[in-house]
Image (tube, rainbow, N blue to C red; front, side, top):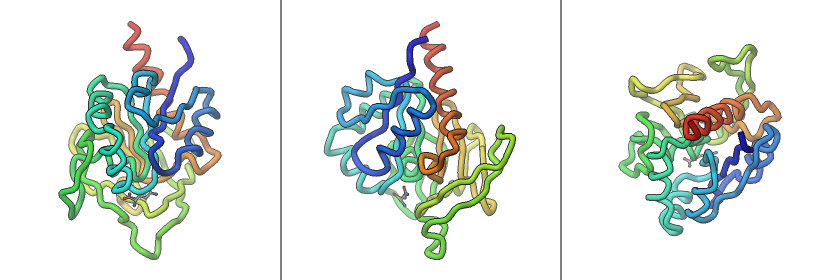
Length: 198
Ligand code: GLN
C-alpha cells in the first residue's frame, strides 16, 4: 500500500506538533489550509485550540460542507480537545454545535479552573500499560450514544471514544512522546484505505 497521508486542519491550534507525531508513526503529515486538500488525504486530524475560533475560520474558508462530505465518505477523523468539541452532536449549555459527526454530548472547559492543565495516567482500552495524558482546558463527554465505544475515562468522565470512523480524545496526544494513541488513529486510516482499495 502507498504511504498513508494524514492531514491536520491548519486554521488554528496545535498543528505542527501533530505533524511531528504523524511523522513519528511513519506516515506523511500535511497541513490542510484549503478545502481542496481534503481530496489528497486518507485521514484528518482536527487539532486542539479554541473551538469557537476554529469554527469561525471553518466558515470563513468554506470548510463546513467539505468536512461533512469527507466524513460521509467514511474517511477517518480524529478530534483532539477542541476537535472533539467540533465533531460533537451536542454541547452542554450551548446551541452552538458544529459538525455533528459523533453521537456525544460534550461539555467544554469541563474540569474547572483548578485543573486548567494537568497530566493524568489513564487506562486506555487495548493498551497493555498506562498512558500519560496531557489535558489543557479540556472538555469531556457527558453522554454518549449506543454506537460509541468508550476508550478511556478519568474521574468517571469519558475522555476518549470512538464511533465508526471518528476518534476523539479530550487530551493532547501530540504533546507526549508516547505515540500509541496516534497509532490507534493511523490503524483506522490504514484499514479504511484498505477497504476503499478493495
Ligand atoms: N476549551 C477549548 C475549546 O472548547 C479546547 C481547549 C484545547 O483544545 N486545548 O475550544
